[in-house]
Image (tube, rainbow, N blue to C red):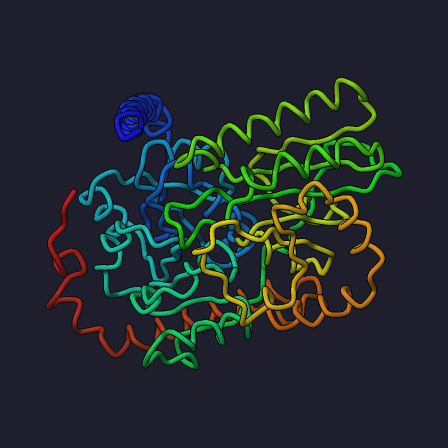
Length: 424
């Protein structure tokens, strides 16, 4: 068993190296054609040090950032070749590639970056955080009650943008001596203002059920994924009714750690294809596209794991069911919504049709849900979260001007590029 795992790791390492070399080669043309303004044009940077597998973390911010860029020019700084290729093809805002620290320094020198956004906790974030004449702001890649959301790493940033009261309460339980009033801004869920898109099916009388599981996690405490424990049974049951339409959106990392998850994922995809072959009118959907939003808005009921998808769906105010992790050591924060949610144990996965029907007609469950929506996101009326997001940015820009005036003489003494040594 150990030898088999070593072989898998070795194969993955070789694939990663080959993918990196391929990305570097494919980037030569686009980088030569790139015209990035060098006149201190960009005021906000989004720092992304990950590759294609974690694109979902920055992808969900595309539309809010594109809207923000109409007021404050925004630049994505990407540190990997594969990630840069994806961003250049997808992102609605300009992208700069900084493979090395000297290249990063050049970008900082050419621009007037005043705010840097971070969507994850990549260790390479610290290569950007050495610059002191800008605000470093953690915006995360979703709201959830996962253990990832209560890390002391929040303190590494000057400020954090959080969804609402639930996030503040969660952090207040674990962060010692953290000035929430000054350093945390409630912005709701700006992404929800863009939950739309063209449906890949023609709506009819079928009830639409979204199944959007997370990956298996890299440790037992974060083993929230349900693809291998719940997924095949519940999707099979829904496909068999003739009255449901399944939208299956697996996490892009499914199977990265545990090949059983990868196998279950392939089985579900195959079952959806077979069901559509039997009845083309069913129009079941396997969704691996870059856009997230239409699925959440279109589904009558959503089935999700403990992940940011719980709260993305919660922001719509529509019914959802949470799969209960089978790993007994998986950390579940029951101080918030998960204390009052609709759980689906693995041994009831095959009975999902009964659970969906019950929830669809349970008015008390709908009322409870609305209370949690407000606690997590505040006012979810269209445009409110976007206004809070822009207001928080404006406040930090005003604070930047204030501190820049106070420290104006310091620039000549300690230039930004000399604040700390750089490494590749």
